[in-house]
Amino acid sequence: MSQGSGTTTLNAPSDEAVRPEQIPLPRGRGLITTVGPGLVLAMTFLGTGDLVSSSVSGANYAYLLVWTLVISLVARTFIVSSIAKYTLMNRHGDTQILEGFHRILPWLPGFMAGVVLVAGFVTQATFLKACAIGLYQLTGGSWGGEWGTFVCAVVMVGVTLVVITSRRQFTILEYIARFASVLMIGAFVYALFKIGTFDVAGFFQGLFTFQTSSETTGAFGPIVIACATIGTIAGNMPNLLYSGFMKDKGWVGPRYRKLQQFDLMSGMLPLLLINLLFWVVAAEFAHPRGLSISDEGDLSHMMELIVGPVGPYILWFCIFAAAASSFPSETRGFAQLAVNGLHLSTRSGQKWLGRDEKDPKFRWIQIVVFTVVPIVASLPHAPNLIALNVVGTSVSTVLSLPFIVIALVILTSSKKYMFGYAVNKRWQIGALGVLGVIAIVVGVQIAISLPTQLGTAFSG
Image (cartoon, rainbow, N blue to C red; front, side, top):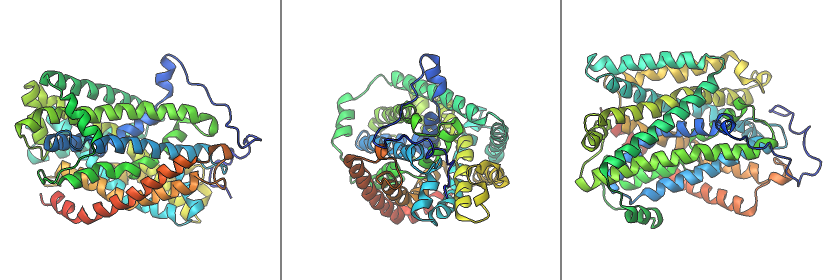
């Protein structure tokens, strides 16, 4: 029995070696309004701590580790593209990636649903705290005492509830992502302009020499920082959200593959640019002056030194924009994944397959687990933001990363699951295999360092 919509197989081309005619890319303004899932997905990645971790790495190591950032984003694009390939070009009509996982191991969607509920909650708690801190500082940062941040978190939860209960919630999320990405790029371009220097030679040396450092400066050593960055190479949990976002957009079937590929690149390129700007600003200003960045307050101080009194507001706006564009999107995406996994792994859930969001559990999980309960991270004396970012990324990476890559290799490399024209070529199988090995190695490294990270995050 097919777990998907069941329509793709009926509409399959007679010659499986021939790729079906593609929906053409729109022109003019339509090119901007038609695409969107890729940018929504990219902004959810940004909310996992890119702003903070890129700034910390740039301040502590200049351009030494910048290659890890670029490789991780390139590899992540490849992984997400593979996820999209399966959901658009599989022969069974599956429209969610977990439906493919179910065909390999029937218990895997249930396991992944459990991971989503735990790791997704940690990630959402991080996003909400970042939103609250940014909003609190933008409104003066001197009211409400230790409960000021919590009040701002309550406000953000209220706004999010309005967005996610709207009939056009995905369209709203698309506009939020576009607005946030443009303003964040502009803000850090302005900061770099104020610095007035850019070590082009040092940047390209760091990009192509693949060096590391034996130093142990900062809250985390360079290898741990590299793992936290490159550990997402094969996909912590947010990578899986893309299939749900495509379905929300109405992209079902192989004819959308060309449009999807353009959409993904149009989202990932701004993400790369934003990350590089964060890194470069910290590398050009903080590193040569020996400024240490260990929390969001240090980032604010750095921006004040760069552009004057308006600097902290730029920083807090960027923190708020990154998290505010991620938090509502992932309440929907994580709920889609969790509910789909539960439906695939339980007999009672079978009746909801293909219409996951009609199940009352979807709304309950979206609102309670991924929107309201994460507010606990904004209570006084909760973990600091930077440590929580690293821990959240590490937890989701350790639990999900190897399964995602191995399952993708199997699904996209076999005619048992894919149409003949869509089966991976040898170089694609090889690339996924390499990423699979890296995934396992990185997962082990992060797992070993996780107790220390947890101690750092929850020590106050």
